[in-house]
Every structure is written in structure tokens, then in C-alpha cells.
Length: 436
Image (tube, rainbow, N blue to C red; front, side):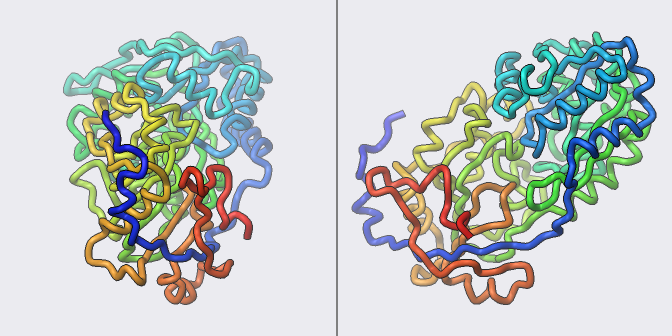
């Protein structure tokens, strides 16, 4: 791709002025698990299943989501299973993520801090699943070959509203069994009828998968709006279909929100698969990859500035943005991005935004292209990512509204964004609003 030479757009954007920003804090339900290791251990010990694992091999399925305390949860689960006499190894349970490649999936686990040294168990990564059954209408049900070869499988699953469909079972334990452990083939068959039919397809395949697989239990995790561990629940295979909908309802209630309407521009500093499957959460930005999802659009322009290291080149979610900094382009790897869209049959998240040479020109382009706005009173919100929603930056035009909101506290005086004079980029390792 031929890119514009440095400074090419300067004359088109030279009259665009950025407003000053104000740092704010947002308050949400503060409850969290204070001792994650102790709670995970207590849940596992109390689930009534562990007497079965003595002298058995257990595959521990770990996904690609950036679950808070993930290495600790994995290490604790490995330790508890070993204490009950099990021989434990880890399998990536992430469908087509990691470029639908065995080494790519092992690499994703490393990026998330899940290494043999850190968690005390070897990782066996293989993309070839086995068929363990089929649905009444002939859909094959796949399961990770290494996991199927063990005596039992245990998974660690974050429960959360899905980014592209609605149902009683969304991101969670059922999906981990069907899509995560189903590998690319299982994910492909689950998505075959499109996202509009995902709730029915997931449950239909999920029933067979739970019945026919060697799953023993799932360690379910729900996180609060501060991206902290809100609750941990060890759920036996027999109770997953009963208990998951209630956990999903709790997770939905806890989700953070952008508390303003009719924004001229939203700036998201970073996107990544470790944040959510679509790089940034559509439930927050209200831009979805499936046309059947009901949306409440409130953003005229969406600008993204970079990708996380942990996303390992997967730029899923970039297609939701209108404008992006070149820092996104430089990290994109199509071979790691496109398998998700090919499997999920959704193209929007993998499309390309307009790329500008740096953060400064990206923000200016966002302002210039926003339709029907008051350039003297631009309504702008900036967030780090859609997991970190307790601190934001607001343009001065939003200050009066912010003062009226019960969960929003203005924490700074107005200031100008600190662009580097040489690169035109904002600091990657810190933001002014982190200081308060």
C-alpha cells in the first residue's frame, strides 16, 4: 500500500483546533474479590467434582481473553487439580484466534502471561479437533484433540455480554466448550448460519458438546466495571446450562457505559483481542459487526490510536473506527486478523479505517470529518480502552453535563493534550488523567 508522505495532509488540517480536555473519574459498583487465589481455591474445592481426578489426566482450557488475574487463576487451578492427584496440562481454548494456528495460539497465551514457568503446567497446542458427536440436524460437534484425549477437561471462562449477538448464553462457559475448544472448525460450524442464528446454534451445539465431552467443570469469572474480579464460581458440567444465564445477567448489569449522548468524536487509545474479541467492545461504542444487532448510535466519528502488544498483530475491531493513527497500521498482521472474520462470517471488524500519519493528525481528521458539529464546542470523549472505563478525558464542552451526573467527578482543570513535538503522538505508557 502506498502511503502519503509525511506532512502531506498538514495544509488540509492546519485550521483544525483541538479543544482542551478535562480528566474525570467515574464511580461504579466497587465490589470485588479481595483474595482471588483463596476464592478460586475455595470454589474448586467446594464444587464436589475433584474426587474424580485422582490418578487422571486433566486438560485445562484457557482462552484468549484478557481476564484479570488470568495467570493466577490458571496457576491456582493447576495447583488444586494436582493436589487432588491429577496430571494437568493446558490447551488453548480460543477457536480461530491466534491466526487459527497452533503456534499463534500458544503465542497468545504467552502474551497473556500463561507460560509453563508461570503456571506450572505444559501447554499442548494443536488445531486439529476431533468430532465427539453431532446435532439432530447433522452439525458436527468438535473438541480439541488433546483435551479429548485426557480423562477430563476443565475450563476457565469469563462471563460477559457478547459483542455480536444476544441470547441466554453469550460469552461464557457454553461458548468456551463449543467454540473455544471446538477450534477453528467448531467455531466455523457454529457460525455457519450467521450471527442472527447464533443464540440457537450455540445452545443446540452446546447441549451436545456438554453431554458428549469429558468436561468436568468450568471456573466462571465475572468482572466489574473496573476490570476487577467481581465473582468466581466453579460450576460442574451438569449445572452450566442452569447457572450461566444468571451469571450473564450479573455481568451485563456491571458493564460500564459512556455517560454522554451525541458525541462528535470518541477517541480510543488502544484496541486488542485481549480486551475483547472485537478489539473494542461494541456494547460500549454501539457499533456492531452484525446488521441484526440493535444499536443506539451516538458517536459521529471514532478514532483509534494503537493496538495492544498482547493482540499479537490481530487488528480485529479496526473496522469499527473511522480514523486511525499509523501506529495501528504498523502493527497490523492480516494473516492474524482475517481468520476471525472468515470464521465468524462478519467482515466489518477487519476492514480498514482512514490512516493518518500520527495521533495528532488522526484526531484532527476525526474533527474535520465529523458532520454537523459546532467546531468551537466539540463534544469529545477519550478513553484508554473499553475495559478501562473508570477514568476518561472530556472536552470542555461536556463539563457542564458531567457536573450533573451522579457518578462522574471532574478531577482536573482543563489542559491541552501532550503530543510529542517530533512524532506527533501521545504518550503510549501514560495519560494525564492517570495522575489524578
